Length: 302
Length: 307
Image (cartoon, rainbow over all chains, first blue to last red; front, side, top):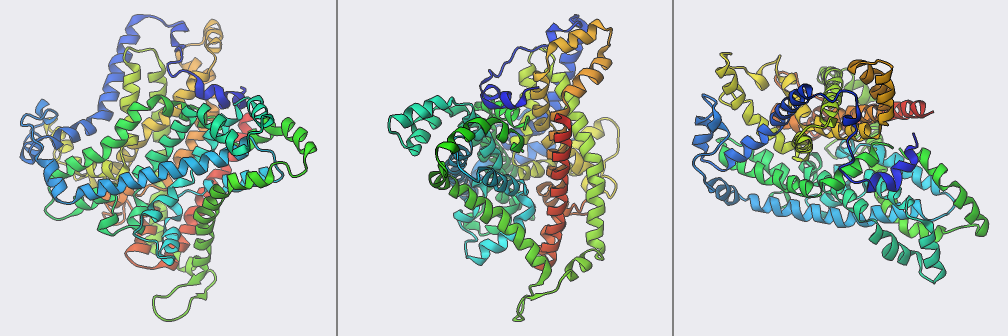
């Protein structure tokens, strides 16, 4: 299998709805198909039910959430008495601050991460220089060290330079992402080198080649890499818990967990907070799903 | 991961150009690479080195200066019943959760790769939990597992008495396994579906002509053709399960009685609740070593699989 080649441009530009081959197979009869559809829907429903129930519970009074559990019925999943009261109590409790923090940190990670990952990927894919494999090796090895595993020493380092409880400490760890570098690099490798050579002959510098030729051509890969950075940072829990416990700098995933851990919890507000925190990445991913699927098929081949 | 591909893809132009200029594009390349290399060194390599350094030094809270203690902290760690328990729980968890998730992901990939009406939507629904922050998923499941929660509500409908789930010593770890699998299985499924789409349909036709049934085709076409993706998922999943933290921290904090004290939760509590940086660093080193060992095995398996 020529995985090297498919990993490049082909893997990323392939239309998402690649023709499915199963129909070519010998077993085209109808009954197993219907059975499969039922099975498929049952599986899909079981995965989505917890999220559905969360959204339903965010939109109804807390009393109704627990009243509809015993006994369980269709009303467990369908809110009868729609209200936004849970959301207003959530924001009264200061959750808005956490959402703002998460948004700032994620936006910073996205911009900074795409900039440094794309620049590095460009050098590794396009430029020719001695020691390239050494640089590549250093990047590979360091990005293979799982991030959460080194959360404790990272915390000590940030505390040592008094950067704890700062946006910088929350953003920096997310910007160097190995997957993003690999994804962009494999895409850049697929850009015909004639383009760069021609532009160079016309007197364009390497920054110009990067900025005016490679980046505009790489929108799908940039979106794919952006999604990786976004989902990673929006999810972050362990490191923010360690380096930014200050209420002013608390991010949404930490705030929601601590909110849920309090005595005399307000379940309605918890469901509202869970819904909001989950909704942001869900909507982004649904909107850009095509690019995410493509980045998955590209990275899976590495 | 892509080391293998670099040389092959870059070799001819690299040779041609370096003949043209000795240094090639080194100065400009350094400016492109500097930020990422700095990030890699300062935020990955340096903390890892720091963990090793801290694990070999005593960093007392008082005025006493930091001093070399050699392997003392590891000796303490490996005689600490809490740490040994968390190693045991982590191993038990890994032995169950990894095969379970990979087999489930494979089964789901095969089902959703079939042409079914609405298949794309089903796939998306199975995949969505991975986009939800893990702490949010944990908070949702914490309510779901409550004695007055919906899971016990369903059991009551079926005439089954209320279960303890997270508070039951026997059910707590399986409950964590359920939650992390609900989160992760759809993600791994996507990698396997991407692999299934790469398989040449001619292979299935040939197998069918040879009289191979469904199972034989799965066993002799699908599995070998998917070996690369299965290996990737196996390793990536094993590492992510080694590092499970938020669900444990939020749902059980290691309890009841240490039954769900996975290693990252143990490391966190050493640093955060006990303030014992030296012992947390030693435990971190253990986690990093285990993770790197898993990655090395990945390189072995993948290079063997592709040759």
